[in-house]
Image (cartoon, rainbow over all chains, first blue to last red; front, side, top):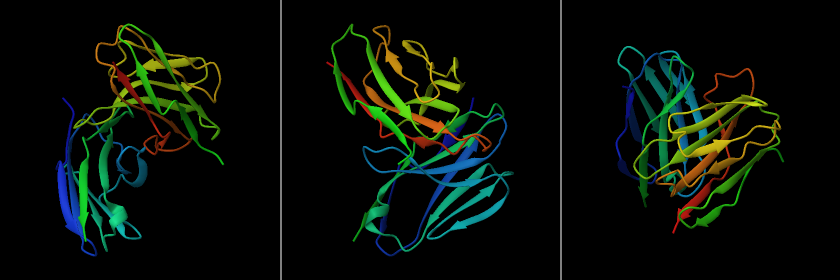
Length: 109
Length: 114
């Protein structure tokens, strides 16, 4: 079966750095996506990786290793507004998105 | 402003009733999707449509129905056959010519069965 694993919850301090990991086992791979979802709201797209390496976008960066089936989302200079769930999703060989359950990130002052 | 509009935001239903959730987009996107989100689980695909007058079942289509008569609209009906309909429902669309993983979501509809 297809599987995406992320930690259920993480806690970090305002101004610090946090890394949210995602491992996947899917039938084929056509890209990995990170979304941010505030409580009770819709997910919003953060990043896309299809080749190995690091993609940087402001305070957020996303890394991919296809050989290891592994990605992480790195958030720097954390702000209170970064408190949200972060969803990892993989596009499989049929171009269908397979979603992880999400990681709830709690930011403390 | 362009975007996706879902309505209603909150809906209560008695057991045995059908309900229809509206999803309208003015982004000129061809592809539209319906997902269900339950606590502790990833988004699960109910139905999707790549073009007007055509739609495909997702992973959990049983107890749901859709139509795609217009490009802008993709309503979802939750029928009485859906055994556990209480959930957060998300509609999304994707622009043409992309890698089909960058989705634009509506604000969601929270359905509660009493």
